Amino acid sequence: MEKTGHKGGTDTGAQDHGGGRSLPWQTPKESCDDPLAPDRVAATMANPSYRLAEQDLDFLASDAVRGPRLELDYLKPELGLQGEGIGHTIVVFGSTRIPEPDAARRALAACEEKRDASPGDAEAERAVAIASRIVEKSRFYVMARDFAHRVAMAANHGPGERIAVVTGGGPGLMEAANRGACEAGGRSVGLNISLPHEQYPNPYLTPGLCFQFHYFGMRKLHFLQRARALVAFPGGYGTMDELFETLVLIQTRKIEPLPVILVGRDFWSRAIDFGFLVEEGVIAPADRELFAFADSAEDIFTFIAEWYVRAGKPLFG
Image 1 (cartoon, rainbow, N blue to C red):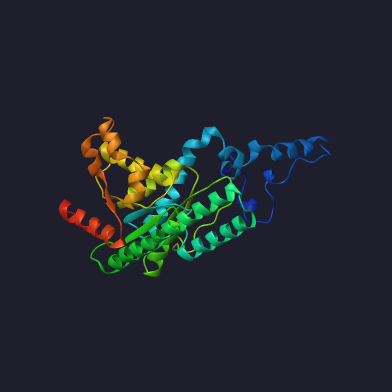
Image 2 (spheres, rainbow, N blue to C red):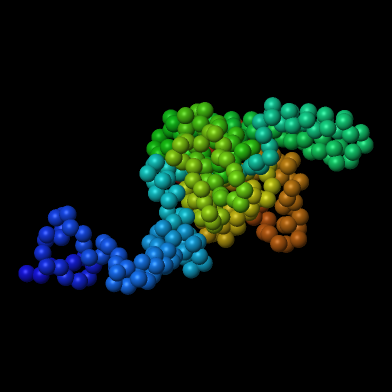
């Protein structure tokens, strides 16, 4: 009886399967039959069309395959978070440019040294002024570290499902939050974004819980998909982008309400004039109730806990 071969034809016996003999398609056509055959076969096999789709990087990077890439960008972190049992998170955003106090003071000293070496240099004076303000804001590094430590400690000893601290995985205030969670024995998540230049994750992320994204959209989705609160420390475009997207999603009822805390009232009141937006009629007075200000780690944690009490929902679990 003939057996159907896996190549779509037929073969005449089992001796070719495991018998040590090569199958017809395992050797190329010999040049004695056609002198051009080897070159033709080589050209066919070298062409990108012959590569397996999963191994063809040019194909995978093409516009036509953007849909599957988006799915993969979502799915890998999703399965990783599920596998680690991460059900809920508290998201912390903040500037990458605000380091811990000692580092900020060293940077200021370096700027002062350059200024002193170039009297009258306006740019050097400006650098000193900015470095001085960064030193003042470095207190937020301490605050973010303290807050995340409190979250991790409460999660470790609280009822129900443990909650993780998640940041963008970078330096500055994101590092501070990951550091606080790490030092408390909590799970510390980082959602990195691939950039045209080299970058490194901060050293306080739980191995297996730092994920790289190609698409900002997928990264944003993962930030909010498990979020129980969003805490925004002083920051620039990236922090404001995430903040405003969250406020818009709450405002438009696209997501369930969650506590949004702006840390550093003086900074945020100057950076964004919410009162002006109300006066101009471009946001409603009620939209100012979508967030709260806080100026200490204790205030942040207390506000989140009390928000869930008022909502009749558990923070942990």
